[in-house]
Structure formats: C-alpha cells, structure tokens
Length: 199
Length: 199
Length: 199
Image (cartoon, rainbow over all chains, first blue to last red):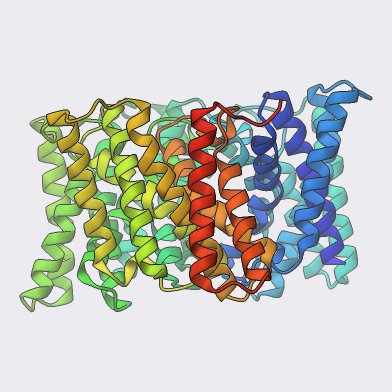
C-alpha cells in the first residue's frame, strides 16, 4: 500500500513538474530532469537523511518509467492543449502529490524507528523538497519560502494528523488515509479561500 | 563537550539565519526553514559525506527546539527592535557559530579516522555550508564565494590550528578552544580592519 | 584503470571549473570551491545515491592536490594569457571530463550490482551534476537545462554505448574506451555543427 501511494505521488509530482518545465520553455532534457527532481527529490533527501539504502527508485524501473510517461504526457498536454496550462492546471496533481508524499514520508520514518517529531519533519521534507530542489534548479526562490497560500503548513498539519492517529492506536491504513485527506483538503481550501499565514 | 559546542553553534547560526530571513521579508515557514538550513546544513552535509548515521539532530529533539526558539527570538528582535537589524547584528553570533562548527567538524572527522586534510576540509564544510545552502535557497550567490572580508579562510586557518595542536600532542579540549578562538579572532579582525584576500 | 580515468576526469573538470570561476571574477576561495564542486560534485552525488562509502576522494589526497594544482593553473592561464579565455577554452577539457566521468559512473554502478538503467542514469549524473551544482552555486540556471548544443544527451548516448558493449560481452577496457569516445566525439560534433534537440 505504501508503495502504491509512493508511485501515485511520483506520478502526480512528475506531471506537475513536467508542466512547470514546459511553461518555462525548457527543452526535452530540461523537462525530463525537472520531472525527475520534482518527483524523486523529496523522497531521496529523506532516505539519505535517514540512511535508508538502496534508494526506493534504484530497485525498480517502474518509477523511472512513470516519470518518463508523465514527461511525455506533459508534452502532449502542451501540444494538443486539451486544457489551458494555467497555474490551476498544476494545482490538483500537486495537491494529491503533497498528500501522498507526506503520508509515505511519515510512515517510512516511523517504520525506521525514528521519533515522532522526526517523522513529521520527514513527512514535510518528502512532500516539499522535490519542489524546493526544482525551484532551486530553475534559479528561483522556492515558492514555499515566499508568503502565499498554505503549502508546507498543509503537509505539517497532515503529518501531525498521522501522528495523532498513530498515537490513538489507529491502524496504518487509517493513518495514511487521514493524512492524505488532511493535506488535500487544507491545501485546496487554502487556494480556494486564499488562506495564508499571518505576517 | 563536543555536543555542547555543537548545540552552541546551532544556536548562534539559527539566530543569524533567522535574522537574515526576517530581513528578507519571508513568512514564518520561510524563517523556520532557513533557520534549520543555516544551523543544520553544514553538519548534515559533513555527516552524509563521512557516512555518520544516524544524523546528530535526529536522535535528540533539543536541536530542533533550540532552532525553533531562536526563530521566535529573531521574530521578537524584529518586533520589539531592542537593537537595529544591521549586518552587524548578524556578525557576532555568526562568528561564534563559525568557530564552534569548525572545531566540531574537525574533531568529528579525526574521531572517524579520516586523514588530517579531510578533517580540515570537513571543518570548513561544517562551518560554511549551512550559509552556502541558505544563500542558494534564497536564490543568491553564496556570500563566501564573493570577494570580501575573510570568512571561509578563518575557518580554514582555525582547522589548521586544530591540526597543529593535535600533531603537537595537545589534549582535545585545548585543540577545540584554540580552534574556536582562532576562527573568532581572525574573523572579527577581518571585519574590523576590512581584510580580504588579494585579488 | 578506473581510478586513472577518474583522476583524469577530475583534472579536466577542475580546470574547466577554475577557468569558469576566473571568468566570473571570483576570489581565491570562490575559484577553489567552484573547482572542487565541479570536479567532485557529480561523483559524490553518485556515491551518496548508491551508498558507496567512504567517498573516493576522502581516502586519497591526490584528488585534492590535483584540484588545487588545476586551480593554480587556471589562475596562471588568466595571468599570463597564453590563450584567450573564451567559451572555447573550457570546451575541450570539459568534453574529456564528460567522457571520463560517464564511463566511470556507469562502470561503478554496474560493479555495485545495480540494474543497467540505473547505471546509465548514474553515468549521466556523474558526468553532468558537477556542472549543475557549479551553476546552482553561481546562481545561474544550469546550462544543461537550457536549449543548446547536446551535452547531457552525449553522456546518455555514451552510457547506452557502454551498456551495449557490456551486453555484447565486451571486456571492461573496451566498454570504457568506447563510452569515452562516444561522449567526446558526439559532444565535439554537436558544438562544431551546432546540433541541439528539436524543440
């Protein structure tokens, strides 16, 4: 189940990353590398920080194939314009990715025996640092560091929700689902009602 | 003793990082993440390069709590303005952090059985790469790469001082103290008398 | 043989990196750090991703000495101007570095028992991410992400050539040489005839 969620997060994030790179006018190499960095960056950083080896995507070509497929899909979306490539086009796949990656990040840290505060921290790292590394690679200030609609905060609250469920003795599937829903709902509400942190 | 010095370095660097992020007008997420990157970036990179796991800050919530406290302190300093937030405000905590982190970086490398040249190298990495990563995350050319008052050089000379003391058979506490003092004194002199490397 | 190739790649890349940093007007610290990042960044990232420890350059001062020598050579080239520091001056050492690092990256991954697709991937990472990290550290969009003459693609094709030779049962030296030649020839042809990926 963790693996399916991780693959879903990879798919959503690489699609969002590919669309983003398309919009910046990068060439095929740039789009592919940005899709890889966006999709695998957060989980890879988590695994390096927690010393979990071999890295999840080195043992299974499925991750790479999903990312390549999503990069092609992003190119097709651009070519045939079935939907306009606004900021909104990236929003929904990105919000799903945020939920899936927070959930797998927290779960993996708990399974590796780290303390709850590290688990929540790693959930946020897994979910947000793919995007941070993408923005750094594109030579921009990472979008999550700037004032704006809640993003990292959604992941943080979802991580706390996972922790709370876990502490109350809920089973793993419930923890994962509640975590994903928390991130998804708060993120979409934050965008819909323009909610940001107070200055 | 190493651990106390590491915590002191974390405190000074996260305060300096938090003040820096405040000055750039980042929101609470940005300030917290920048404080974490500045304080833990150099030591984390050192430990990943030397394969020292688990990472020092994952086993002990004290580091995270110190950083959060310093981020709040930085916010309070900004709100109540007990002192003006000039470049100079960051200077002294940063110079202390430079000394503490160089000392712990060299000591940790020596304890892990690496050669002296790697020890000095890792002292510089520990002391300077938190700042480098902070500047990269803020989308700026890292301040230590630009011509200016000695910074990385102070850390390098302090690392050599540690090595010299160690080679002359001095005890660990002497090595650490001489290293910290070397970095602190050279750094403050470089700022006071505007000393930089020849072009 | 692998080690000699790795040292050759380090020499070529640190020379190219040092010349690049010279051209940007960095001071001695900047030039040295950029030479280190360009030369060791790709191989270090590969080894961290594959969990190969201790890192190759920590066990042998030769790598550091080569890089320092190349930084001095870059400074001498600038001072005495035996040849003009155009883009072209960096081109040839860089193309050799690209070939050597792709070859060692693929070989090391195969030796560590990873699948061929990871081997080719790691060849590209080894060969290109020193430059990506250099560009990020210089606060620029990495040159390989921008439309332009084939670069990462040369490394990718060279990695495929290694894989093909390996699959056909060729010995290690043949695989290495064919890989290096493939990268070198395609890269120089791409620059000579201005070949880039289709938009």
